[in-house]
Length: 290
Ligand SMILES: Nc1ncnc2c1ncn2[C@@H]1O[C@H](COP(=O)(O)OP(=O)(O)OP(=O)(O)O)[C@@H](O)[C@H]1O
Ligand SMILES: [Mg+2]
Image 1 (tube, rainbow, N blue to C red):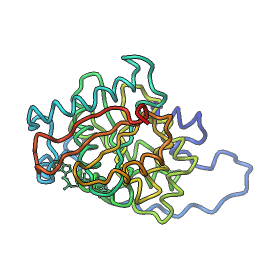
Image 2: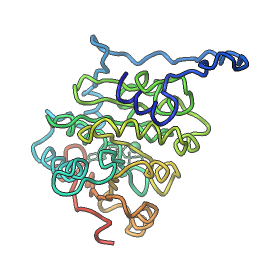
Image 3: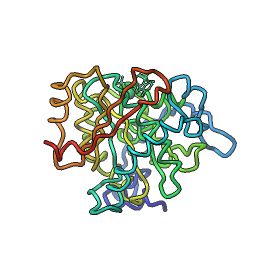
C-alpha cells in the first residue's frame, strides 16, 4: 500500500475503496459505469513525456535550455521555499511542502512560474515535486503538458472510486509528477472546499517534506477557488506582473489570504518576452512587511 493510500485510509475512506464491505447492508444499486476519458499518451515506460518544444513555444523553458540568469533567478525563488518546507534554516513552516502559486489578476505568469519552478525543483537532487493543476477552470498547465481532459484532481474529488494512483502521472523528468486538473465539473468550488479535498491534500503532504506539492491556481480577485485552495497549503507565492498590476489590486488580493501562512512575492517582468533575463525577482515574505 502506498503512503497516499495509507494516509487516505487514516483520514477516512481510501481513494479506491468501494462501499461493499458490510455484507448485511441492503444492496445498493451498482454505481453507473464510469466513462473514463482516453488516457493521455504515455511514453515507453508509462511516463508522460514532457513536450519541451510545446513548452518552449509558450515561453516555458526546460531547465537545460534555461539561460544561466533565468536559472539563477529560479534558484533564488525556490531556495527559501524549500528551506521553509524542510526547516533547514530554522523552523519548518507547517505544511510548508504544500505551495500554491497565485496572483491578483489573470495573466500575471502563474502557470509560467508554476511550470518553471516545478522543473527547477525536479532538477534538485534532494527534492521531488508534484505539480497540481489547481486552476481547474482554465487548466492551462494541463493543456501545456498535453493532459487536458485526462482524469485529474476534479475526478479524484468527485468520484470516490477514483484513486490518487490513477490520476497522478509520472513524467519523463524522474522527480516530476503531474496531477492534471481533471474533467470539468459544475461544482468545482464545492469540490475544492470539500472534506475529501482536505484528505487528498493531507495524503499528498504526508509523503515527505522533501516532496513538494506545487499548485498552479486561478487569480485571487477573479475566482473564489484560489482562496479555497489556499486554505490547504503552508506557503503561497504571489506572482506580480511588473509595470502592469496595480498596487491596490495586489493589496486587495493578498488581504484575502491567511496572514499566518508564509506568503512570498515574485515580481514577474515578462515585458522582455521569452527569455528576458529579468524574469523574476524574489522580494521576500510579504507577511513580515505587513
Ligand atoms: N517571465 C516571463 N517571460 C516570458 N513570458 C512570460 C513570462 N511570464 C508569463 N509569460 C507569458 O505570459 C502569458 C501569461 O502567462 P501565464 O499563462 O503563466 O499567466 P497566468 O497568470 O497563469 O494566467 P491565467 O490567470 O490566465 O491563468 C503566457 O503567454 C506566458 O508564456
Ligand atoms: Mg494560469
